[in-house]
Length: 251
Picture 1 (cartoon, one colour):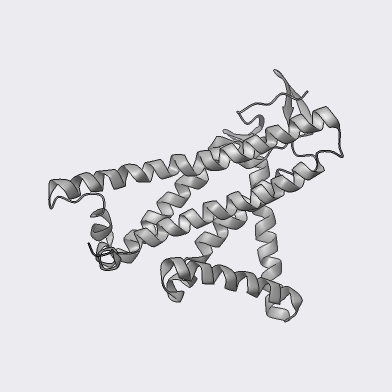
Picture 2: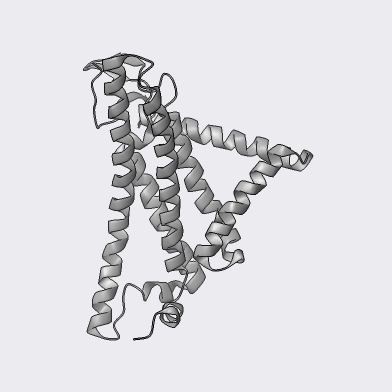
């Protein structure tokens, strides 16, 4: 049975940078999205047909969802690139991890056999990087929207001891988001990888197919959850305290 490891295996070094099997697949996901983006852009400019209709319906549905969270169409259109990029990149990375050859092709190392390709989200470094990027982007956009000092005022409020304590809790929650984001995605994808490896080893090639379709759905759901949590936190960080107080229920 193939060895299951938490650590991504190094394939080679590019200068001083170690290239792992998960890094290689994540780079492949980036290349695929760039190529698809260029092709979609060309198709949208040249003709109007069923393909453009599908793309427009998907974008419109995402904009409607974002508008319901952010409260305005203008804000939804402004932050669409961030949310859509996170969703597409995470989903593509998850789905590439299920392609034939990923997780089933091995190469010899000094320590034994290692996977040549592996799902990016099964590497905690990948999920941590995406989580940190999401949290930093949300805070930067919040500072741009409200102003730097107004945004920092959510974390450092010296008006009274209670608000100071609440601000510290808000600051701690930002670090907790990184842990929550990264471990949720990592846990679900790594568990699916282990499940597929064990099932394929025990019962061959036909029985695991239903599990493959299940993991396709899980990959989509995890990407959607990651993007939607980013959207919710973005809505909180780009809204001032006064707006929250206006919409708070009266006691």
